[in-house]
Amino acid sequence: MIPAQFDYVRPTTVEEAVQALRDGGEDAKLLAGGQSLLPVLRLRMADPSLIIDLGGIAELKGVREDGNEVVVGAMTSHYDVARDDTLRQHVALIQEATKTVADPQVRHRGTLGGALAHADPAGDLAAPALALDAQFVIAGSNGTRTVAAADFFEDYFTTAIGEGELLTEIRFPKYTGWGARYEKFNRVAQAWSIVAVAATVKVDGGSISEARIGLTNMAGTPVRARAVESALVGQSASEENVRKAAQAAAEGTSPTADADAGSDYREHLARVLTGRAVLAAAG
Image 1 (tube, rainbow, N blue to C red):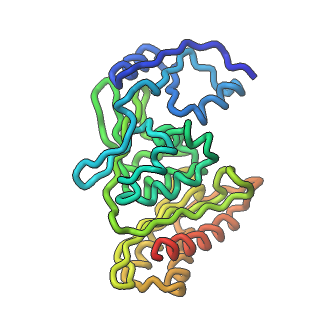
Image 2 (cartoon, helix red, strand yellow; image 1 turned 180 degrees about the horizontal axis):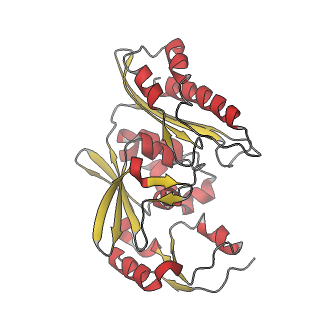
């Protein structure tokens, strides 16, 4: 179908984008990579009066170091995230997950910030961001504010980004030397995850000293597998120990039942994939 008629602006600064949001009100929509918004427009599931294209704002693109953090602009493409040397060295988990997103064409067009702001529970980047304790910088008419990943994802397709605000950057603590793995289960290539697990671990002398694990599509928002994290710390990275700890992966989750999988099957997948992800991350 052809989208309904709308006005279009392409600001060059964050301030201009915030002003356009203020002028457009609740009928304005932000266009990042467009990989979620454009299909919705074509199906006429949304008919905004104004589209604000963020592609012309240079300050929202790129990766840089800032002390003990790595900062990624919200408009940085999946392609650039997957190839960046700084992320490879310090935040390997977000790269591992990004490489599994859709196909090369989508990865060239889609953006990290757009995917995170969309907040699809089956999306592949929210769980890694949660596991990595990312911080989200949000701009609005009252200035900027920073929201922790644990507070950013509020519900299905709902985040802490308020009306008249936009996500400008994502700040990741450095996990230099940590192993990382994203294990994803889907029925066909390039499909959304039925369940996926993001794991990054620090191994010292053959034992796991720290662990961060996030679960994809096990609730309306990404979930931390904290019981598994606690069970892993201080244990040798043997298959027996990891598989045993992974049995707690579904604790505190609320997976849905749909045409792809029942809730009990998703719980089973979470346990199996957690074991695989941690073993791979631990080397």
